[in-house]
Image (cartoon, rainbow over the protein chains, first blue to last red):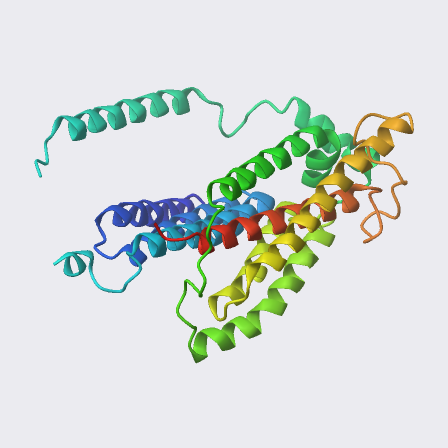
Length: 87
Length: 233
């Protein structure tokens, strides 16, 4: 149980760091939804299924969707790297 | 750009200070064995008081129903402010490119399933984990998905969503007032407990959760549609 928690938290930290360093905006949004999914797993491990469902629906689903709409509005919604688009 | 500018340096100091503060607090907290003062008595009496198999629902809608009403009004204020800020000219044609075959088939397959799952989670909120908030978000997703593949004129949809939202929010308050005028506390469950674990049980809690689910679903979907259709600057 503690081992699984530690693995989940490690994945969560990696995903959170990769949000900062990924060159592609869509990949960054996906990484931030991986953070939410890992948090969902932690809530399941801690036997809080109600909170886990809320986190999965709002954090992973709605949050990523709103971030993606924001990227669309700002014109960053493309699969190219950010640097390529600027040049 | 200078990597070591003053702003970056102060942000680093702020982050380090926050980390030290959080660490100091979390060392002091009795995380694994917190004193359960209210929780134990709710676990002991919750089923007898409300008849709900899911004690979280008993807390959210019966013991702390007024807080849930506050939560709903915060959501209402947030959606209202987004609607206020994003009114004005709407994009005439679809802001998204038309979906391809894979996206449209997946959407047509998933939308009815999502509606069923959302309503299931709302209706069974007093029996199994889940409830109005979780199911409402899933309903909003199900409503929003078809917008990814084809465009519909939104004025009519918007009026319908607003109608559903007002009726649901109003009925939550009306149910609360009903129990107030029948001599109980505001939002105290009535209509009897029913058989424990049945779909028709726990008195008014399922009705309240249906109202919450419809309100959250319609509010979030109108918020998403507003965001999507706002005219680009």
